[in-house]
Length: 321
Image 1 (tube, one colour):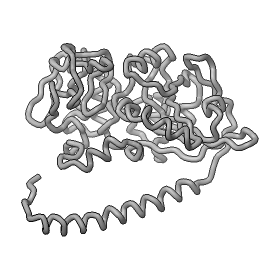
Image 2 (cartoon, helix red, strand yellow):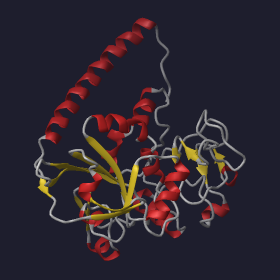
Image 3 (spheres, rainbow, N blue to C red):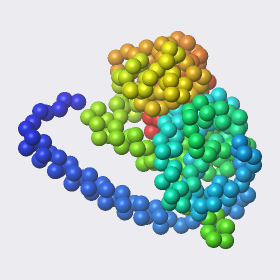
């Protein structure tokens, strides 16, 4: 993008025009939030049970004494060795905010189908403190439309309030809100999926204020533009060790989005022009530190198929559903 260089007075005039649109957007967002709060509720009749590092827990237990609960449906299937990088990018921004959630009578919990030992190992690797439980082979993920069996996907599965026949993944991201009344009854009040989750990503808000924005390409990939800050893919300002991981937590990330799979070296990938291309080892499924969020020209379905062919979990960040 080419930017016009103008005087301060011209810049102020352009800013006044832009702020009028920003105010209109804020007012529209306020009206939308009011409609969200006014949504009808559905009573939760099933007795969902989850596994955690502290033992079995019911849905009521997850409220932790508060009246409101947000569940983040974190993509981490039982056969994966690490969590989804897009879900990790979102989760990186939770712990600092949790004290404010809890001060406002809200508990935040992540739920995945992966077993507890894998969840705890990944949580430790990432340095997170929030509660994260396993729904295992129970109905919870399926009832809230973020996990799908193969037959269900082929026949048509409900995701983001639409019947879809193009879903290639067994798990997709989302969030669900619940409320508990004084008598202990639990109600489902709201759910959001796909790009709806961008509303809870403050990192995007900050990036959107910067001149280069999110550094996304035309296909929505956050890795379609050159990455600065140490090695390719290393977040600016965060020390990177010899294996390409952050010294703070042993993570490898691109703009804060940790990568799936085992810890791998950025040296396996090469930055070429405006994209980060996989090396031959990555293309074969060995290491994934520089795999693009989308494979160029493939679109959503083609990208997911490419990942599945390589045994790599879906990069939900940048795949716009």
